[in-house]
Length: 416
Image (cartoon, rainbow, N blue to C red; front, side, top):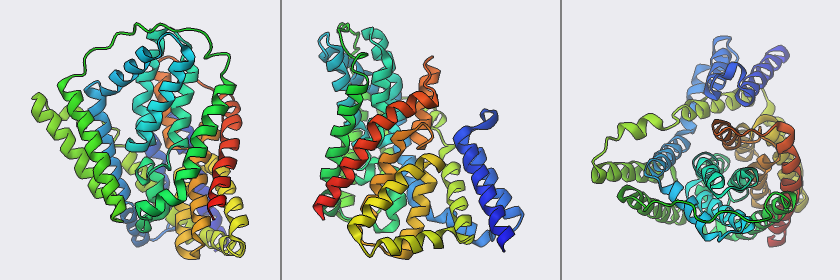
């Protein structure tokens, strides 16, 4: 049994390392799925448990499908380019004002479309705008990466990790606001102030405000309307305590089809450009987490949570902080999945669960390896000819994530 558990830990660690490091430049999904297959072939995880684990991700898959379709439709119709160019024009020659406007755009995008949309879709548009405005793009790109996580618990829909952690017990919208309105505001504000201080020399001076902005196309207007409608539907669903996956999927499909019909374009282009590999990646991670649970890792975490529950305030501070840093070691999605399984068994106080969510959402701002969204952000800027080393990101992340985490957890503790 000891050898089997050690083998399980080794295979899971290797698979997660592959997801983070992408050896041979293979897609992240290959490593997650490969690790899951190895576990099944050597008999370390029963097939029945693997199937159950994959099935647990149904709501997450539907959520991701809807968001990816919506985001890709908006991108192809030029909506994000239009928004970024609008921000550059409203900067009125001030690089500092442009930084603020990009940050605000990232808040709105993350809040209503999820952190993946900000990190992956908005980033190329912001890069293009920075080049046309003739300013250093890195502060604006860092703004995209950091706000994608800092604002990812404004709403339940702002980050797929929220669905993962709470699973089928997502708090109603009113309760969500009661728990996270103040911590979200603290996270967003402190991240902004810290990043602005770190990048103060790069965002000073002037910028060109005569950035070309083409009129928003008919398809772009429809996509914008679809985003607003989708946000409204999801807010209503969240308020009614309905799982968000199916409404998100329906909204994304409906918006994409509406744009294609009204612009007389084929939906194949949208379907072709969506990053579908994220679905087997998530499924593979669910199986890896099931294997860790089978090996007894979750039982140890459950015991720790029960001990921490004797003092909820102290337990919330410790658990949220530990999960925030652990997310950078194993990526926040598997970290969130493990925490979710432990929460379902330990039944800790709501204060501790809320602190865990803050940790798993905000913690990835420390390093490039922290979240899938940040890894995809790095890929996006590399396609544009930019690059950020692990240590460069860590320097910015340490200066921004740590104070923001302290502020967010502190704000949640104040609420009781």
